[in-house]
Image (cartoon, rainbow, N blue to C red; front, top):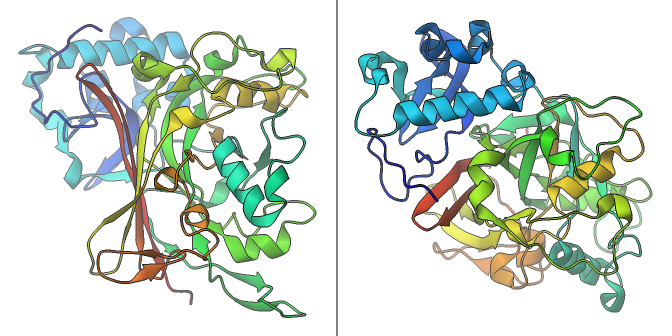
Length: 414
């Protein structure tokens, strides 16, 4: 791995190193949202960089960098977005750069407002961690036959609600709905008692496909722009009552949280690893070659109101049984088309032990094993005014590429 340095100073454990260059949408006081990249603790204004001519050789309309979503930028295609990233990496590397003549293009991350990075047309959530699926099956079905018959044959998924996806930092009101209380004969309408997080990664579609033309496993990576952290909030009690026979609905669509920075596949390339062995053998359209899982460390914490942070999960994206290109190939095998900005979420990411479980449903085992926080209070699920924060980073041979964080507080219902 080629060693890089930057004239922008940052700590060794900074997520936004010179190796990263993630894209997002930010705004500053009295100026509209526009494209930026994160480097160290700074945000670099790409609209300003384009205005100064640094991207002229790439032949991208300067207006693209002044948009309030990444969609038009992503739509220019990977050959051009890669060149933008490499140009920025070169400008930010070494001991000096022409960019140093434009200090006003750099803003402190703490002083900017981050926005949802893409206009999400469609959103699909998968169910692709074998450990998570097994845990859920053990809790609610036959422990000896925890996985449903189709699980090892297809990446199971459902279409979610894109309108309720929010950017990190936006808080969420506790959802209300129908609950079937223990030993009751009729449901009641009240606030959910079992609000939960789900630790996931999301990937952003970077290239349209045509209706009726599946995206092959060999071409799937060409359609993925990058990844972000994703919290698929769930109301387990609402979900339990409604999910038969058609699956998730109100228990899932009240909110989902996305981190603001999109890390490109190019930045994550050094962290590819082999995924779990898939048995039985998958259908030919799902057979892949090479390393298609990613070694990304993931943490989840709960911070009570006026309390301190508690790490409740250490997991890793490499645990996923079904990888991203398999998910996309399966999603389109029936002819379903995808569009730039569409979001696909991995499904809850769990490892083999309780310390790596990706939801409170598993960590507290459906409420039967509450955890104790450092303020002495217990949690079966998420309480009002609790803040859940997820973080993620990949690290190898002194190179670190991170995602920042995705966080939100659960507020009381009206």
